[in-house]
Image (cartoon, rainbow, N blue to C red; front, side, top):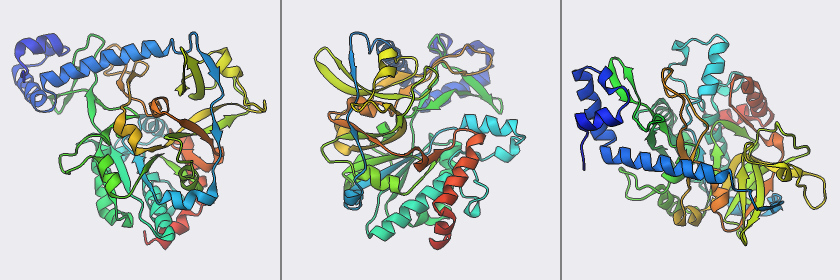
Length: 421
């Protein structure tokens, strides 16, 4: 394994010569432990692959016939039995930058946001100012207790050492796992966030240079399920199997839900290896920002994919269901899939629109895995449509009141008190 040398660093570390000798040694020592040179090369290769996938995705609809995907509806009569065979993945590792910035604009100072995470941000007006993560865990525990079976839950945090990992781990310990018998907390992986010249960017933390990194994007928590944990003798997917789960239900820990949404997702017929939740459109305008479920037929092969605003075309926007009443459904970010899907396949790398690394550097894309690609790698997918008012997601400060109102509508105050929290 090649170690970081002064010669390699001059070539592959941005503004390396701006550091003094002591800072250089500290940075290289840190990189040798956390991101050895061969890992840096792997990240660079993944970056090229992501750019290639992004380029190909823009040509995805060329010569393709688009069609309305299979739509299914919840079958609540079978859902209770099916839920007993499900595990839940709560994704909680996002940095919440949009929420933080919107709160600072409202006058919140940086000291008050010292231990900020979006999933634990206090919801004023709900029990004990719980955040969405606490309420979701109480909701899951209550459902499991009423149904008479355990529901295994995995929470994915930010990378090791991140604020989200520390805060969430402390929260789980404080509340004794919220009474859940099978609860696992795992940290996401992180990638080096490279400049446009593929160099490692760094920032100073108390005068010590640290590489700029980012969590492994929205699909990172899913791919993390395939990794063997250093503190476990199995992968999280194997842990789900040991806990009795045949399917995995993916929820965003930054949202609150009508409890029926868990039963709705569990009701999906076993013939589907992946079901994405969607919201039917009554109109489809050019400024609609949401990812779109659409079927495509190309070169004799068919698949269902999610395409973003910059890829869709007029045919996408004009497609209607066979009855001619609704346009294509849009993506909610909620999925249920058979474990075998992820055991046998992996999500492809993708690149985001250019993001700021540091104020003095040109903006550059982040790369990682997209959770939306679960649908595209499925053999037999379907889209389940649910009402829009079944959930509310926190993205920025304007969303907080809506989330609180949903929490009140479904009695989460009373529920948290009844469950002893």
